[in-house]
Image 1 (cartoon, rainbow, N blue to C red):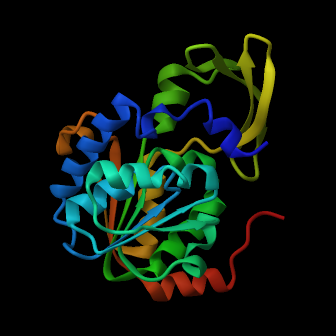
Image 2 (spheres, rainbow, N blue to C red):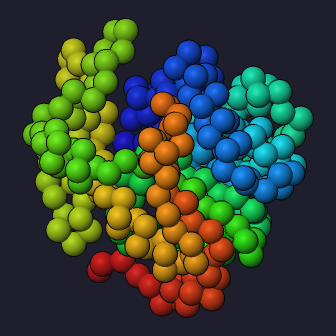
Length: 264
């Protein structure tokens, strides 16, 4: 099963018609306005979904160019609704593809985003490829922003890892997941999702529970500046922890991609 199937049941936070998503859009716009990002430039939204973060960044910076990349083509069809809600006068480029090959799929941009706590879908080997590709897709003083949460602390310590867990509830369904195994080589947990009532299988997916420090360390290899902006610092309720990277080290990215593979 594809991620499109899973996200049909867990997507309220990015739907243009959802009140909570519209409040998040307002907070995202305010967050980007306060960062001092380049004005009138170009924004690349990775794993963009419906485009909520990329369009908020474009609005905040008055961007002249916006590219949205996602493996889920179905979500990209919702982008125009956010464009209209934001009152933007640009036509975003929508790219259906793999973020781990972003440098081959998009041109150069000044700002790149990976928002919505998306890193859970990528193992450490994927992360190296993502950072290297984003580095090559950014301009000399480009900025890369990742919104994520520290799952090692929040889930593995705070909540405790659950064999069975209710993920979300809709008007006529409940989405639950069950632990299916752990891949020690990739550091990924496999969970199978079911719709209740009826226990209809949605699909099985692999997740890596990232801490923020590890992402900062990987990012510092590829960027000259790396820092963490916490919610208490930026002050926006509907924006999480944000990892900020600036000044890509393109020579490092090229060397890594020349000879880097995941586990065999």
